[in-house]
Length: 84
Image 1 (tube, rainbow, N blue to C red):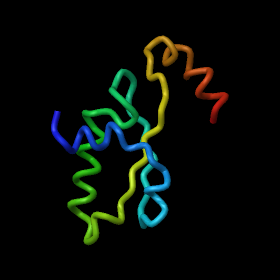
Image 2 (cartoon, one colour; image 1 turned 180 degrees about the vertical axis):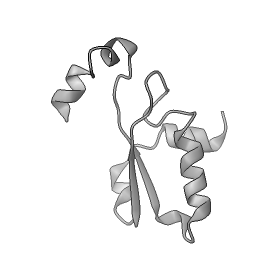
Image 3 (cartoon, helix red, strand yellow; image 1 turned 60 degrees about the vertical axis):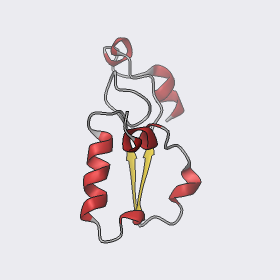
Image 4 (cartoon, helix red, strand yellow; image 1 turned 90 degrees about the horizontal axis):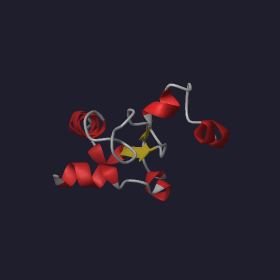
């Protein structure tokens, strides 16, 4: 696993986002790993940072949720719905 993916898989520190001009709150797809996944999230964040004049102004916060097919078929994770 490369550094970029490892960084985003562990990115959970909201305090880090205070001085960011752009903040993305990202929810990974069902069955993806960690809180931003590996397939769509990290490559999208990398592309956005590349496009920005000041890439350090982009903050990303992943959302923790179970992401199970069983709860997907129910219309969502009951605990996650309560938490929201």
